[in-house]
Image (cartoon, rainbow, N blue to C red; front, side, top):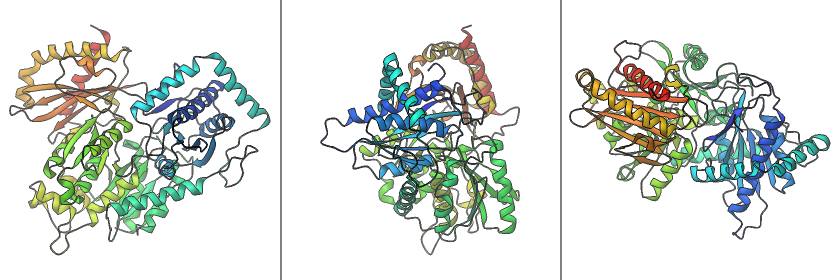
Length: 599
């Protein structure tokens, strides 16, 4: 338990039996089997308790799937016997992408006693694994229910008798009734468990079709796209079938389940194989201009593009990807929707989204890091009458397009494809032309524009990448509220010493501290420690009060690291010695280190 991280974003840890986070062993230790089995039991009891007062007489139904990490099957085999012993109706789909199992769960929305368990550690290294829990609303549990489940789990595992009973179920099953989880559509064990991959696949395919239809996106002459699956769960998902059915040309590499050949997180060097593939495809057929790389569970996919200005492929930063997706969806909204439209994002999303939204008259709302927080915020906004078409975490890339409640690279690719293909026809302006008009950049518009032209028209910001080595820290202070209180003292002292320099060099004339906890944003903080374990942002403002930059910090809820970043309006080059973004990031790191030591 001391080595596990339990949060609304997922329960994660190093599951490889040898303890190596880069290990490819399929084996997990006995204590991990007990951990997973206890989690399964507590979740089944959570579903039972949640609906005990309803008239629903159906058995508890639990959908289960895994990404392609080597330890996935061992985790599944530890959970299923416990669920079956409780009388649950277990439906196992084998390898599924995260958006797939969530779309599958939606088909059981009338069953209030249904939920899913998804085995994945998302973008973490291959030796890690974990669990995600959700209901039938198309996403993971919201923060409130997730925290309730964690509390129940902690209470359950504190009782040694419970551990003994769980261990007995696992041992008995392993000795006499092995629950094998083969990827075959046959009866997989004497327990009567069937593989339901065909059902999950169809549910996801149909749901994505509805999302495309709801967006009213008839894409004419779609571009060719490539994908480096990197052995992820998307290797056995709908991607190729879905895109080719829409008329896209499609090429892929590393498209066998478990064929993980490079770092799982789709950033930086991890995008290079896809860039090379795109260059090869473009040389044979110039219509190939887009490529994507998903993480292991396939709920995010960052992009590579063909850039005709440099005549080669290059990869985009996560913040750029999200900005392009937002631009596409904002420009595609009709006038009625724009009357009260909003976008829900996380706290370290670049302010370039604020600038784009401002051009369309769209309100921006921020939540703490965590997909569950952003999804919950969007739902709350819809209840208030806002039209929220797109939401997401710009710092992680990808986007969530309503009615989806999870990031999906299919939606990201389709958003970019719309920007490229929905062009001016007769008197109706295309999406890029609408953007140029809204942003006062009609001089940049040309009828034969490319994706590189669209990117050049985006608001100019220098933003720290989430997986930049300078954006990650290791701290000793366990209580983050105490750390942030100490940080406040350091910041106030430094501000007094640097404020003349900051004004002369960067135009910073004032600042404001903001805390993000769950879906709550608290501005004008007088005590930084109020942010607790949530996000803390310090906004810098110019002489007119305009927000032009920020520095940010938060301890990760899924990894044992502390993340920092800076976001600055302007055309800074990240490698330049005078870069404002790098200056602010170094200053942020120095202040946190001082606060962490208590000096």
